[in-house]
Image 1: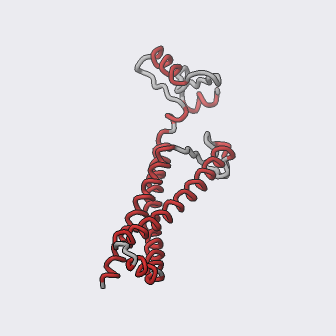
Image 2: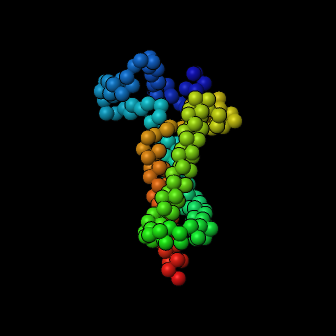
Image 3: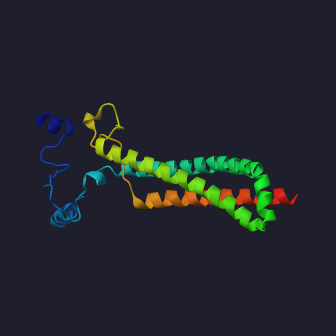
Length: 195
């Protein structure tokens, strides 16, 4: 401490005071009480607030990852289109039979839209389950480390938080993209059979 005072030219000044709370303490109420006691000249922050820039970067990384995965999902939807197109070509005779039995073009199209949508939704369910398992494992065991030398870091493992809103957003995007691609394929099918 004496060396630090001499190096930074501090005799009686204090830059920060750290407070350790008991496990059952309410952090927000303690912060409010300390801020009230100290007045407006002092800043009271918890550990996460002190690293707000890092948290902003992590949040930005989350949204960039979300956009990139959405883009990958759109590209992967072409796989659904090609699968449905091949299925339509293979089932041309069956479609003809359904039409002969009185099924409308709209009813036949609805079958392929539903099938494409089921393919998308089943892929989404499997992907979300695998993602949840990986996130829960990361929360519990911290397999992915922030750095090989984690002794100087406050957070040693890559932070992961499973949020219900994210699951709903991913499910909604997958359902929407799956429906649009299936609908586009069915519309192309109608034009194909009208030739």
